[in-house]
Amino acid sequence: MVDVIREIQTTLRTGRVILGYRRTLKAVVNGKAKLVVIAKNAPENVMSDLLTYSKLARIPIYIFSGTSRDLGAICNKPFTVSAMAIIDPGESNVLDLTKGE
Image (cartoon, rainbow, N blue to C red):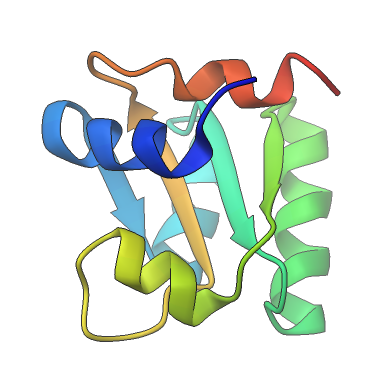
């Protein structure tokens, strides 16, 4: 089992990550994202848009079991993060999150 929190924090330290719904959606549409992480309590329109476009672009999606406040705290940000795109995983194994599904 991959430790989600540790892998996200490693990616933030060693890789490239985009935070926020609009920027994540743009990365998905442009094909730059390798993985999309969405908070469990993301608004319905955010969830449906990202799921639809990620499916079309064949980009894996991981639904984070915590809230957007939890995801923001993991990213060391003083605000909520409903969605994030992994551009470069760096030294982490974050892309393995979707392998078990």
